Image (tube, rainbow, N blue to C red; front, side, top):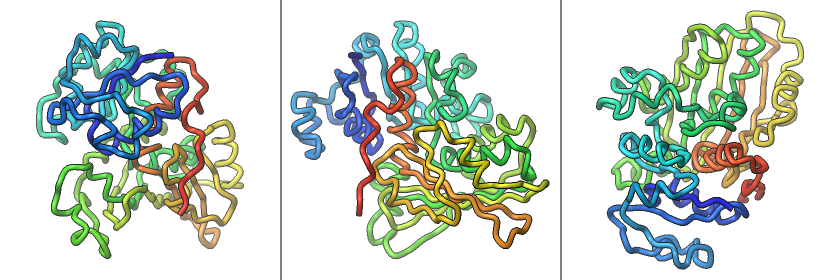
Amino acid sequence: MIKVGIVGGTGYTGVELLRLLAQHPQVNVAMITSRSETGVKVCDMYPNLRGHYDTLAFSEPDAKQLGAMDAVFFATPHGVAHALAGELLENGTRVIDLSADFRLRDADEWSRWYGQAHGAPELLQEAVYGLPEMHRKKIKTARLIAVPGCYPTAVQLGYLPLLEAGLIDPNQLIADCKSGVTGAGRGAKVGSLLAEASESMKAYGASGHRHLPEISQGLRDIQQSAVGLTFVPHLTPMIRGIHATLYGQLTADPGDLQALFEQRYANEPFVDVMPAGSHPETRSVKGINTCRLAVHRPGNGNTVVVLSVIDNLVKGASGQAIQNLNLMFGFDENTGLTAPALMP
């Protein structure tokens, strides 16, 4: 049994961590912090957790107390983990950061996209990008994990087999992606109001989105060369879910694309390659740590289309964070993550 803390537990990713960790037999959530909700019981803020965290209350972040944990999750806005991560690592605590603070290896690029100087550039080279399907071996020995974003997870897993096999032009990648409103966080924003988001769909960030450099960095790691990516995200009137429609231009005879995907992910517990001809739905992954994929080649032409769906709060955030925790501490990778999806 290990003790973990959660910094910033009042948002959607924080409560999702609590929900999933309540099923984890090897984890005791010993501390959860929130400056604005100090003293409030978790089960009072989130009644769905009654019976699981009846005595746990939010407290002020305290580096000494957090440093006594085996691992600490940061479910915070960008910039927060910078201030505490180094001190916790010095105490021997492993850090799993769900924010964007350590995803980009270039501090200057991070600063350009996030509008502030990077607060811990000395840690960037140590941080391991927590996409297990690409970096499982490094994750097992890591002290600091940068949990991938939701869009980057869906896009990279969809393109991975094609780029590894050298079958598509890396300079002509198009990712057309949709997200539910929880991707914008729990804070009050006009664009997330029911009257604004319901019965409507819109693109945003078409000229540049913060997830673009993260996705490009991951695809470059796969390709081992520069990539050309057009990434357009959309807001859709649903609570949870990411749907990525990915396009690539074939540069060689691909053979059996279905077999390529099935073989690449045959031993991946959280990637489900659907039968040929499938169109995966976001509701099929609601509440679970699974990415469902389907690959198509319309008219046997030169374009390959990959459909990738995840729950943005689970495989796109908190579930993937726990998957990383399991690998880091030698637990079965599936521990705490085996429940079926919610339907309807």
